[in-house]
Length: 364
Ligand SMILES: *Cc1c(COP(=O)(O)O)cnc(C)c1O
Image (cartoon, rainbow, N blue to C red; front, side):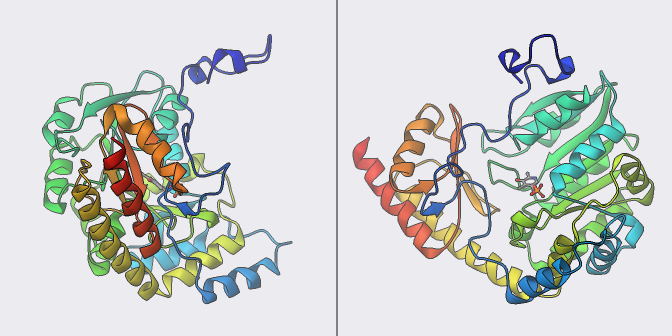
């Protein structure tokens, strides 16, 4: 938050000073672009069964929903092979991250995380009064496990890892993640943000991995979301899977009625149709391959993606490339001085990106 925005004589906590604001430089909202590739959303709308479930639940909108989102937690527990007290739900996984950091950190505590990563992390950590210790990525834009372990000092309370990482799209392999978590002291909470895990492995592995990991690592929390491969970003459904003692701590800071009834209904309907996610992931893999190959052929540098977006580390050309794509009616996310992130969408979206990329080369 900037000082000028404060009201005279009325100042919020000093923790808010100097925090970055989420979504700065974002291109896809105020102006509607034909190709909305700025927010890693699914390109297709909700399935008919989710629409019907939402409408049916809305008919009861005068009633409060589940106190803790129990109906959805029970279905998610079944989906992942854990028990319902291993699950907490909220209006987006970013809210759960905020609850976890507030439940774990006091002023002066440290949260160690690879960086560049998700732009919400510095805000959530900063608001809590803790400090974010940023560990640089390696030359291939991947998380560096040794660097992360070296950065864990006596004030560290939480290690926060995004895998596959946003915005660099890279992943570390499952066994490397397990080795890393096993090397972190057990009294430190490890938060693994798996918003993009659906794109990195087959559906069965993605569903089974939280249960397997929790049995190995009791200090682990896995964050998942319905906002990406599950295609429901607008319904705001996030959840976490963790030991029941960690879930109990989250419930201490969580407000009651975390999810509206229609959101619970949409989540249940989506869980009942895993084939839709599988089809979305398959289309993503095909378009991601085509977009990656085309962008490389156009001479652009890119990271190896395991997600539904591509990272172009073009550094000082990031803003110019963003303008060039925006001029072609393509919304992307610009990280000034670092790179451009492009969501993979439909065949038509890929065509538009590759067309613009070909012209970018001649333009340079
Ligand atoms: C999109 C995203 C999320 C999901 O956030 P929601 O609040 O569940 O919509 C979480 N983490 C990362 C890294 C993301 O990119």
